[in-house]
Image (cartoon, rainbow, N blue to C red; front, top):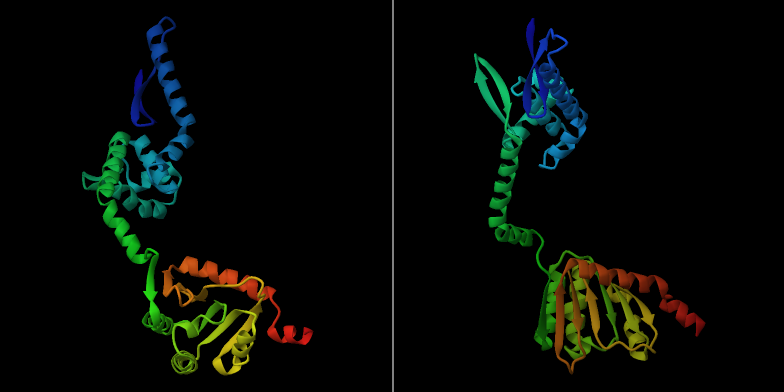
Length: 299
């Protein structure tokens, strides 16, 4: 008596005969024993198969369905759900992922739809081809990235016209506060104090912009700080034993460095991460230093 049954194992289906064997049929004994070992071996590594398939970029559930399809050879959604031990609605959800990846093919047989697995080698080959296609346009893709995340830009401005352009840039931002670290005498070296009062301080008042200032302690600096309330500014003094040469203005999107007048140059660094770094350093100093009123009381 011979009855046939299909045993699913990995990618192949083995047809095993259940035979009423005689004691001396050694060849049939060896054949059946070999097939059983293959079946046991494949099921023993079933969990590894899912983990391996996931390396193709598939989700865990999609990998389970693909392995189930390999084991079944050809199956309906219901068959795949039963074999993968997933809900049928879940299988429906991942089928598009598998067909897009070329891992499953939908076929119609006798008015019924079945899913057939693509051979693993063919799936891997398809992945390589898709990677190769992407590699061909990597330069264009990187240009898109730069459009979203602009490259940092550094440029220089010169003289009084550059100084005025810098402040136009500052007031064109949406910032409601900027930070200044200065020796105190830099700005009047570029423009007259009348311009500072009318254009810079006037724009601050009109737009409701405030500033915080770290300024090197000196007699001139104290005259500036005395005007803080009228000029929308709060100041703290830096010790004079560490002289500053450049002034620094920190906004959200850029940092500007103004040299002493004899160098005649202003440098602008448009980089939000750099600006945030400079802002954090300012905050560290700001929260460490006493207020100027405390300094006066000690004197």
